[in-house]
Length: 230
Image (cartoon, rainbow, N blue to C red; front, side, top):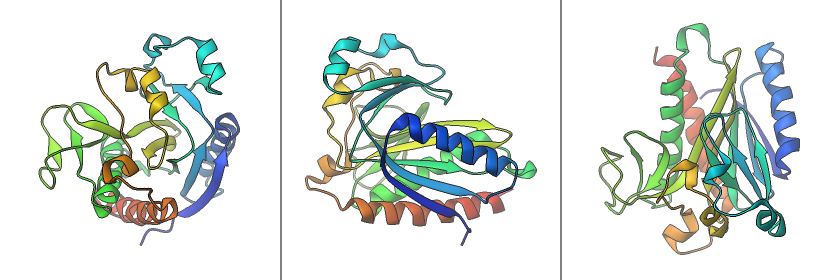
């Protein structure tokens, strides 16, 4: 299985985590460390990606401040999303070798890591044509990929950035997170779309560490297969 260094930061302030991510990305680009997967949770924060806009925040900054929610503009792809305790954040600091530099394929592969993790816990996760991220379907087992959105709720968002073919930023996966702050935004810039969580779908508190373990297992297999697929 792929040799990935896994670091678990626990709960960490977003801006601090971003600075440390960038440092690790530089070390990986210079081949001073191996491929590294960071697991963490963040204190409440809205992050706005390169294609995002504050127009997708439905409430004012004062309201967010009263809820203890920061707003940060970042260089990742995607629009706006929310991070908070109870959400698994995974940052793959992976270097794409010259013969495997297919960013879209890499993103699709990470989506499948989340889909497989959800399904291991009994949640009917799917991907949807034209929409990044992972969604929860009411179609139970099949299909794994839908041709169009028909009311599915989003359980995971992806937004990566690359520098010198080294990835950073990554994936957020709602486990036991409070979903109310998602109602303060147009989720990922998509009007009418709603968020959900593994605990809401399964109607019980989820063992967070077990999810982390299953997610890491699938991530390692994915990366090994990805490197072999070209």
